[in-house]
Every structure is written in C-alpha cells, then in structure tokens.
Image (cartoon, rainbow over all chains, first blue to last red):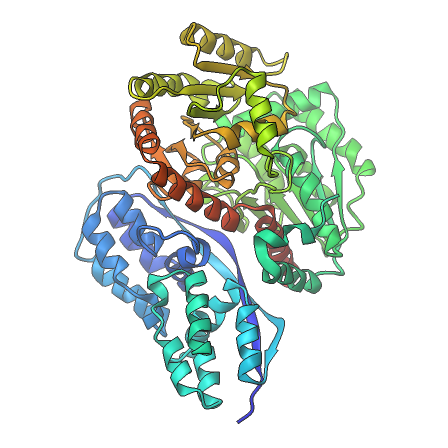
Length: 203
Length: 402
C-alpha cells in the first residue's frame, strides 16, 4: 500500500501554572491539580532539551527529589517510563500512588515550579513515498520532529505503535518497524535515538 | 550584519528549516520591540542581534526606544531596584506624575499602531500599554527577578500589566505570585557570532595574556563579573588561596566599573587590598566594550568561576560554557538553570566548595575536557540566540492564533 508519510514537527511554549511546591505534601497536592500537559512537560523536558547531555535522571520531577536528598522517591519516580502510557491520566495516578507512601512537611529550599505547555504541531517540507525518501526524511528531521513522531504520535493516536513504525509496517518493512518501536527512548537522548532509527532503517 | 545562514554550523540545516517553517506562518505580522536604551546592558545587546534575524526571516520587526529626562530615568531605575531587590524606599506621587507625563509624551513619538505584536521590555516602558488597540497583542518581556518585589512598586506596575496579553520571564522563579496574566517562560541567550563568543586564534589569545603579564603556561582561574559584592570576588580569592597550596596557578578577576559607579570602585579597591602583592593574582578593570579581550580570557582559562551569592540569569556562565570551559557557579538564580551539577560544571555554596571542585578539575584533565564538552553541548542546545528566536516566533504564532 502506498501511503505518503508527511513529516511534522512539534514546538512547545512553556507557561508557568502559578503552582509551586516546597514540601512533599505540597507536591502531592499539586500533582492532583496540574494540567496533564504539565506532566508531559516535566517528564519529557530533559529528553527534549538536555538531548546532548546525559543527566542524572531523565525526568525532572525525579531529579528534583534527588537534588533534595529524597533518594527513594527519586528512584521510584525515575522508574516510571512515560513512553509506556497512552493516557497521561494513568501516569498521574501512578505518580500519586508512589507519593502516597511518603509524607513530609519539611520545607525544601528550592521549590519545584510547575510549568505547562501549549503544543504547536507543524508540517515540515519533508515527505516520503519510498523507503529511500523516508530515510532521507529522517536524516533531515530535527529532534523536535523525531520527538513528535516517536512519542507524541502514540499519545495523540492512543496507539502503542509510533508513526514511523506504523508507516513502515504498512509498507511491508515489519522488521524495521519493530526495531524502531523497541528503541528505549527514555534511557537515551533524542540525538542517539535518531542515530538508532537510521541504523534500523539501513540494516 | 549577521545572516541566519551563518548559524547553520551550530544548529544544522534542519534547525534553520524549522525557523523558516514557523516564520512562514506569521510572515504577514509586524513586530515592534520597545525598551529604554539602544546601547549598554543585556536587553539592548540581545535586541541588536535578534531584530536583524527576525527581519531576515521576512518578519517586519522594528525597535524603538523611549525618550525621557534625568528624573524619569532616575525613577525608572528606582522602580527597577524596588521590583528586583525590594529596597525599602517609598514611591512619591511626584515620581508617578513624572513617569506618566513622560509616557504621554512618548505616545506621539512611538508609533505602535502599525504593528500586530508589541514587545515591551522591562518595567520602564510598561505604561505605553495605554495605546493598545484591540487587534494587537502586547507582551511584557521582563528580564528581572520580580518574585519578591516591593509591594508599592508592584502596585504601580500592576495597573499596566493586567492589560497585557502575556508576560515572559526568564524562569518561573522570577515570577511574582500575584501576576494575573498568562506567564510564559523563555530563557535568555547568547549570540555565538558576537565578538564576545566568536572563535579566536591562539596568537590573539596569547597576545592578550601577555599584555597583562599573565603566564599562558600556568593554569588560569577566571571570574568575569562586575566588581560587585553579590558576585563574591573575595570568596573567589579565598578559594584561590586554598587551591594555590596544591597548584601553582593564577587568578584573574576581570570586570569593569564606570566612573559613576562608586560601589564598583569601592569593591575594586577592597579586592586590591585583600589580594595584596600576590604576583599570581590579576584584578583587571577593562572598558565595558572589551569583548574580544573577555573572549580571549575565557578561552585561555583553565577553570571559570561565577561564584555569585545572588544572580539574575548570569549569562556569562553560558558564555564560558560555550567555550568548553567547566564553570564552578554559585548555587543561585539562573546559574542553576545552566549548570547541571557534576555533569557540565559544579554548583557550590561556599568558597571551600569552590576550591574543592577546582582542585578536582585541576587534577584531572579528562574531567575538565568531558565537562567542557558537555557544557558546550548544553549551551549549544539551550542558550543560543537561535533558540531564543524560535521561542519568540512560536510565542507570536500562538498569541495571534489564540
């Protein structure tokens, strides 16, 4: 089946929710109130922005607990892989479940500031009709574009398969599709991920 | 004039392409930036670089500067300090009158009617909002920390702020809790093509060091900052004293103070007194436009300090990081947004901590190189003017479509 793959890209504009937390209990309450896009921001901002540096924890909620010496909470939250969720409400619930085991009103010096985002998705000028064009498209894609097709498309479409793999499967490249869908995105950065996709495609 | 294409080596073809894609969506919009000065200070510097880039993307963008007399600027400086540092001063009704009078005088001079998007930088020119037309979007771009303002000062500006469509701050920590309009977060940036940051040849770097009798063969510990107690130059000197027990190194404290900056001169003399006749300590007061010299010192440095006690964003950190230097920064303000502790630099709370981290770095060349590389990559991805430009374009797109 011949379907044209149209490459898109995604940009965020972060806004401050006016919600901050400086105790564990504050944080627990805040998690219930914040918009879902705030979770999206805090779970993905490091993979999005810190793409060239491996930081201690990929999501900055875990990193905040770590920096403030709550190591167990940090580890538990870091183990949540947001790429496994198709509904962020479930992610919120799992976060609440972890935090419900802890209680502390001790003031933490560095507050956590909850940001949220508005997502802006644009078509790029890249299109693919063949595998060769697809490889070329990936090669010329920004990490924002990779992020959109690999992560956000799953969330938007509520499907366990990303855009790239879905298109490749339809085109008859199931093995390549599988390889891409299995990339451990949350343990890498998007530059590494782009490299792995290209490797999978040219195998 | 710098062309967008010159940034391709840093952001890649795909980065340039993305800027064009967003710009295309807003190409019929006219943008105006207004601030209080066209030279001196970080805001003027970034606008002078950003506006040509917006125009090169076919977004008609202009820059206008408010006019005022001595009394007006005296009051706006006071307002700035009250919002930023919460100094305990009263605002007199005469000062408000002078402020409003100047704003009204500028209404005729500054044409805002022809623009779709108006960026108003910092509190000085906030009052121009009274010219707002319904179809326009007005954005207050605040470059200072207003999280704990003097309430009287906040009350003065709040009258204007609430009429804006959005505010933009460098980081959420700078936002006052009472603000009622949508608050965007866009960090500031450095321009890799500014004389402060352009690549330099080794000959120029060595020549610059020689001019000041600094030994290029010996490790250099550097802090570039105003001579200001909040930058903790004495703390840096104390750290150096601990380091020099183990390492034969040099300390360079590089800054500038103007003739009308009595505190700067006082701090400068204080440092000179403290450091005494140590031949390995260099306290250099350079003219404010010594961009190439500062660049040369940053490139020559082995380790860079920014051991501030209180800091705004502290972009001098990003400048050093861009030159692949590990920076030891004070655990405060925007420095915390630039340094990921232990990965692309170190965050410290004391001069003892600064000394310890410096020793670790001096002892291990590969650690310095690894951190320096991480620092460069981090700045390249997060704090370059091209990212700033992209953020502004998306903000404009979002506001005009809201």
